Image (tube, rainbow, N blue to C red; front, side, top):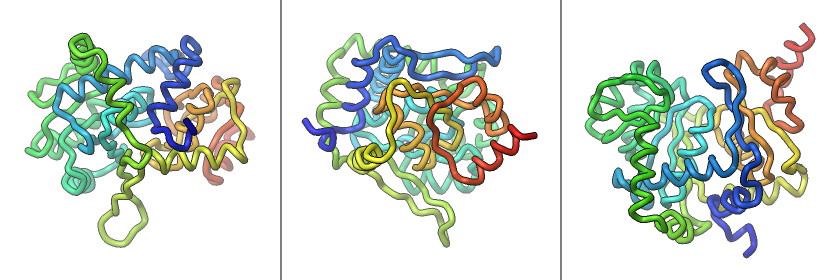
Length: 287
């Protein structure tokens, strides 16, 4: 079947089967050292996310929110949500309480992923005291006692148990997804009035990937450093989907402030960035 007819999960799974034990994602651990996740490990976590979300009652076309800096869990949630035929709604990590409240209401979000305890404390009023939100999943491993909150580790264990009960569910779900099915709602910036939610399909992303690869060449030998926000469509496509579909390894910058140092460690062979950031990076190297 032509790639133009495939959904995002089908392309991801074909690459996972091809590269298996090769390192796919690199992130900094608690010791500030880069650690890798293989394609097989990545796919395993994606499957767990899918099963856990199904256990929580997430169904086709339901909207799931995420507020997080760039990290492997972001992609696991993204692909896990999409595997159900559901829709991911990513928001900027710097979003205010009023902004987040608007996104939740406008998109109809009930399940929300948050990166850190600090972010959850900052947005407590919107996420924990909002009756519209049924469950919050926290990436960071820490003690946070609230009936709505579970850690990502516990969430994945729920998915693993569900997978044992219905092992074929994930693959059957992926096969049902059409290229015309909705994949994400991205809220635009710089508009007049409230932000507008832009609905993009699996086919929208795949068509951009197919068009871009006619001009931009990448392969499994390449490495990319991810530092622009994944909730922005440019990084989502250029620094994530495009690289995944070519089998390139993705390294996550610790923060925007450490990009120059992280670049020395990751040694990227290809990258995507806006002109101002490229200028800032070169200035840092020349300093």
